[in-house]
Structure formats: C-alpha cells, structure tokens
Image (cartoon, rainbow, N blue to C red):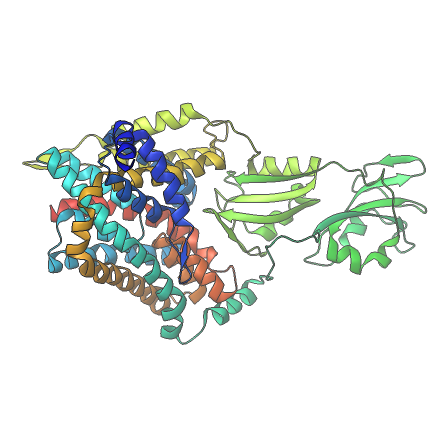
Length: 559
C-alpha cells in the first residue's frame, strides 16, 4: 500500500507538489511555545518528507514559482523603496543597511569558522535573516557555475538543510531580541517608548478589532435656533477640532436638496448630518432635535480602498490633506503600508503606495479617490500582460554577465526579476492606467509562489536532508542565532545611540530590515501599540532587496 502510494508520487510529481503544499500550510498553523511554525517552514518540512518517496520535480517548475514570488515582493514594495531614497529617511535606511551588511559579514565569518560547505552557508544566512528569497537567489547563482548537475543538486540539498534549522532559530531570536532584550538594553519598556511617541505625534490609541459600534454614521435633526441663519459652511465650522461632521442634505418642506456651502439654514429645516458617532452623540442637543427621517438619510455611501499615487499628495501630512476641499465629508478608516496597518495621526506623512481606506457619501469619496490616486476596487482581473512582460524583461536584464576566467559576475535571472518587480510597482504607483494586480493575486504570487518553490527545494533535498542535519545540526543552531542576534544588536545600537530614534520606531525598522513579520507582531504585543509599524515598511522594502542580493554575494565570495 505504501509502495503503491510512493510509486504514484514518483510517476506524478506534480501531485507530490500539491500534497506538500497542503501538508505544509497545515503544519504552518501549529504554534509551539507561542511561536507559529509558519507556512514556509511547514512546506519545506513537508517537501523533505515527500522527497523520501523519490519524487523528482523539474527545476523549471521550481524557478517559475520563485520568479512569481520575487515579482510580487518587488511590486508590493516598489513605491516605498524608491520613495525612501531621500535624506529624511536616512536614519531608517542606515539602520536597515547596517543590519543587512552585518548579517552577511557574520554569516561569512561563521561559515568559515564552522567549515560549512557553500550550500549550508547560504541556507544559514537565509534562515538567520528569515529571508526566503536568499535561498532562491543563491541557488540561481550557483547553478550558473556548477561543474555538474550533481553538484547543483548537492548544493540545493545543503541549502534546504541549513535553511530549515536556521529559519526557526532566526524567527525566535528576532522575537527575543526586539521584544525582550532591547528594552532591557535601553532601560525602558516598549510600552513607555511607544506611549511617548504617541503623545508627541498626537496618536490616539484605537481598537482595530471587530465591533458592533459604528464609528461613522448619519443622523437627522430639526435645525436648532442657534443654527438658524448660518450658512452650511459656518455651521460646519463650529465642529470642534479633531472631530468631523458635515451637512449632507436638507429637507425644506417636501423638497430634499443638496446644499452648497453658502446655503443658509432656515427655521423648520431638517438636516442630515454625517459624522463621527462620538460627536453626534455628545453634541446632538446643540444641533437640534433628532428625528427619524428615512428618506432624508437615504444617502448613497461607499467604503473604498485607494492606493496613493499622486505625487502632489505623497509627502503631505494628513492634516494638510484634511484641509483640501476633496476631504469634505470623507472619513479615513485606516491606512496600510507594506501590508501592515499603521496608526493614524494628523502629522502622519502619506507615501506613495499607501492604501487608504476611506468612507463617506459616494460623490465625495469619488472626488477624494481621484485626488489620492486610484480606487482599488475588488476585482479578479489581473493585468497578466504587464506581469508577464516585466518578469520576462527582468530575466533578460539578469542574464548578461561579466566573465573573469571561471568567475561569472551578473545579476542573475532571479535578481533581475526582483528589480523588474520594484520598477513595475513604482510605475504602477505613478501611472495607474495599466499594470493592476489585485491584492488576492499578489497574495497568491507571494505566499503560494514562495511556498511552492520551498516545497520543491524540500522534495529535491529529501534523500540527503536527514544526514546533513545530523552532521551539522548544533553548528547550524549556533550560527543562525549569532547571525540574527549580532545583526539586530548592531542595528539597534546605531539607531538608538547615534540617531536617537524612538525605541518603538527603531524596533519596527529592525523587524522590517530582517523581514520578520512574527517579530513585528511580538513587538506590537509587548508595546500595546501600532507605533512600530511606522518603521516597518521602509525597512522591509530595503531589507528584502539587500538580503535577496546577499544570496548571490555570499556564493560569489565563498565560492
């Protein structure tokens, strides 16, 4: 029975891949001592297990999935990456580059010290920095100069062995350094550091969980005597600072009108006021007598995600945008940056690529969307012409190489596609007429593309995985822990004692530089704040590029 199942997987390796994905995602949900295994590790281990059957997958299949993953990473972080290249972001850039450079240096030194072979060294670097892209770039680089197909296969097996151990160690180490060790080193808790920055930036802590409470709503009032005779503009000007409320419609007799700013309120008018619930409850008596007027309150509303692409908007602060006429009757519900929800406060600088969730009357929401960039409405349509052409062009860019004897120096196809993804994402952020890739498609490229690639690596490495693990296990644990701890401590020291960065913001930057979402989650939990996410996006954009490149650099230097 078992042999029959093995023969099926050997005869149909494509089924082995999907079985590895199914098992891997299931294993990835397991939590041990508060740390989730993760889909990447789960798929690698599942691939190793299935690899014992002798199933063999084409390298072309593996490479195709990896290129989809690299394109998604570049496309998602492109706007943030290019916008970060300015003097204002110097401290965060310096911290990110320091972490990445130190990690590479430590990995090279420890690989020589422990006598790791080239594949194991690449796997330890990738795992210690929790950057899966390093694995693929290292494999792609080695294959260009591998003396034989057998040598390439052995290299890949060693990479998988090193990565499997080092990744889990790297995740745990990053969590412990950023959420536990750093606060003790600096003598102040993350909670206190984030509270200080929240007060400085005037950030109001908010609950982002699901709730039956409606933050924004519309109510009908018979105009009070204190508002009679005022224009709509004058009445709205009485709303206190940091509150928002607008007169959307007026019932005058049997007629419902959409008022202009200079429209004067008259005795007996019934007004539909849209605003923050807290204001409408607290100030209801000052507005007038509340009534239920269904027809008046039947205002077409829309909740819309808008991607910021307008160069006139990028770089402005929220309080400046709030003064624009397009912001009238539009309410900001949240902002995503590099896939993470960031706190909202008046001084927040808006960046290209930010996804702003806005709500309000449809006509006003459409005006605001036109100002900000393009509306990211739910759709299943992906511009595959754009995706295919950019992956192809990126690969072409990476093919040319400078040959110095036996040494071949070049970007490589993998790095070329990553660069193409960065450019594609940036172009999409400034020219919204083409290149749309929905979030669901990006998730597929990113998550499934990476996990399928990693599962293929595991399947190929299956037969020699256990032997390699037994031989180098303890050294792998020590090396990966040192890579993570030393690089993170170096970045923390630079950020805190040279640039005087707030500890919460610094922790988020380091988590982004190390591409460690689990560490960011741990930091936010310890801080009880979203402040660390303000630093995560920029670090993540630059860290992804550098750490992926290190796969090629390490193979070139040690090879």
